Structures are given as structure tokens and as C-alpha cells.
Image (tube, rainbow, N blue to C red; front, side, top):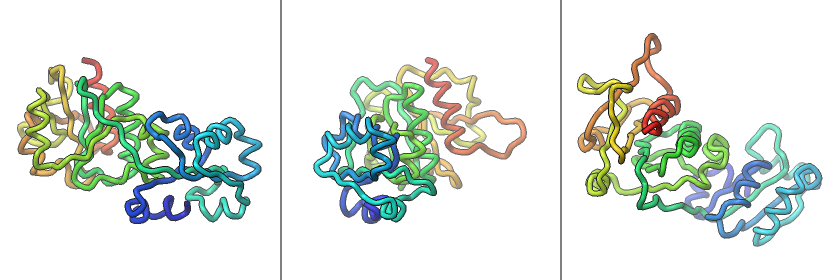
Length: 245
């Protein structure tokens, strides 16, 4: 459990992930796409404080056990562990054929940004998130905490970049890259079509050249004084704009 929480390499090797805390353990127990919790661990104090979460997780767990407070602190990735841990196999939810609004994360590497964008996308009714070019692990503890469980519900895809543009255009999507460019259009002046994809680029280098080449349009967010916006903040503004259509 400790290695699943702390090591990205171990999560890849095992094709598993782990969550901790009342909220995420309950979200995982409630998730229809997770067929089984492999292991659930909790302290006596947690069982008294969060009885509903413990009951739900036990019912879905292949195995479960009580651990000491000391072991909870050893496993935990937080300063104040709540004494609840659950591990499960990685899973995904396919993007529906009826999807009309999508967001692509192109090399977004900060797990907090990835988690926040996923949470924002779910809140605004975006139909799916596509991860390309080495995005942060969506099952890392920081991503999971930032998403507040949205990772468990948000349809997602991690396709090959080489064929992604052709696939999206074949489905009738128009693709907009969020980037500073002399040919970019001002957000607020763009009439988004029914089937829209927005690309959010890497925090430092922006949208990759390979992806920019098959985007239909480039757009920018007008700002007054700051040099730029955080990737998650920029995504929230743009996704709100396209969700209004």
C-alpha cells in the first residue's frame, strides 16, 4: 500500500493505484467502474469516525484489515492521515460516442493541474479528457486529491498522438489549441461549433508543435497584467466558455 501511494514506477508495474482518506475511499467504493477494491486498510479510530465509508469499502474489498495508528502514519502521504487506505487495479471509462465537448492535456505534468482540470471538466459537463505526451499520472495521490474523485467518473483516453488529429476530425470535431500566437483568436470572440476539442499544453512549453499542426484554430485568453495563467486556471476559463454552447 505504501509503495502504491509513493512510487509511480510501482503503480505502473502493478497496474494498480491506492487512495487514502475518507472522501477518496468512499468515492472509490461508490464508483461503478471499479469492480473491486483489492485491499482496504483502516484504523480503529477511522472505523469509529467514518463508519459509513468503512462499511462501503469492506463490502467491495477482496480483503480488509485493521492497522495500527503507527502503520497508518508510515503508509500515509499526508501530514494528518485519517487512517483509511484502499488499493485497486487501474481502470478507465470510455469516451462515449455521443461526446461533443472534449479537452486534451498535452504534456501537462503537474499532478495538481491534471487533477484540477479533470474536476473542472466534470463540473462543466465536458464529455471526456484525453491525455497525451507524458501527462502526470492521473492515479497519483496528488492528482486524485486535486480531482476530489472526478478521476473515477470522467471518461478518458490515452491514444497515440500520431493518429489523434485524424481520428478527431473524422468524428467531426474542430480542435482549438490554447496558445499565444499572432494568429490566435481572442476567447470571447470565438463561436465554438457543436463538437469542440480544446488543447491545454505543458506548463512551460505550451502546446507541442506536433499537436499544433493539426489543430484547426488557436485561441488565447485576454489578460490585463499578469504574464500568463496557470494551466488549470486557463483550462477552467476556456472550458466554461465552451460549456455554454
